[in-house]
Length: 446
Image (cartoon, rainbow, N blue to C red):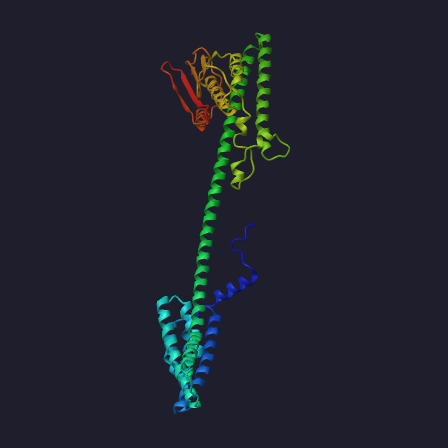
């Protein structure tokens, strides 16, 4: 069972909470509001204490420095909306040695946002230079007031100032750039996963279409086989039944022969139907003939239901060696048929031979249906790379009463489908003398 789009209970609860939250200003989640307010509160307290300390150091009223520090630290609540403004405020209060949390969180937010990297680097450089200068002045002043002087004091102060500036500026910027790159990677992977999911859906749709096409082709192939077998055998049985009725009282011996032929036609029809039904069952039942299971069913490969191999029905069909028997059956039914074979007889493949046989069979059936009493000629030609067959019949004889045989109008269509499926050519149409002509050419080379 597919689990695409399924969610665990925790994810479903989170999604429900997200849908119930309408958003506040620029925040889209509750935890984002809580985080930013907490950071702003911590920054305000820290900046208020440092502002009061700086005000006392320069001789300004303490509460005024604390108030300014409180306002400066509270600016951090705007970091998601205006990260550049937050960083600029942090740079502005560097001389007062205030806003450590403001500066660190602001640079992290700036680097993780979609602000151009050049601008981020420029602001980080300004902050680094300002922090280095303030650190240098503070350390040098402390050393001077302590009364210590040394030749190594100045280089040491410079090194310490650079380290302090780098330590306060580089880590949040690098961490923000890493988070930004990771976020972009996750988004690209999500987009790629969505694209792959869409491609899989398209492939599944195409597979279903191929399965439906395979089923339709198989149904059409089975329908052609059933039509040929039933139409040919039953038409012969109807002709023999009519003859039996006509001579039953006049010529009992001839009636007995017709009855025997009628029984033979019925048994042959049942045998061919059982053969086809056996092939159809062999695709899904265990213990069946291995020949019917050799080739895979496209419908199964495409996710469809199991069925017979696509060519199993035709592979189990008749061959060209049985054409003489087919012509003899028509002659026994009172139809004048001549068979002529040209070229050297050779095996042409069971499917090709079954196709040519079915064309001749359906053509003779049509003669019995539509041209009662007409004579027919069957010419079979073995050529170098093809097998050709021609069936020509004259007009129906006026003295012969045609036996009423139903016609579905699918005979010529089925013959054409059979031949063109092998890349051959098919033609059918009336002749100038009022007869009908059917010709087919089937290539033997793959």
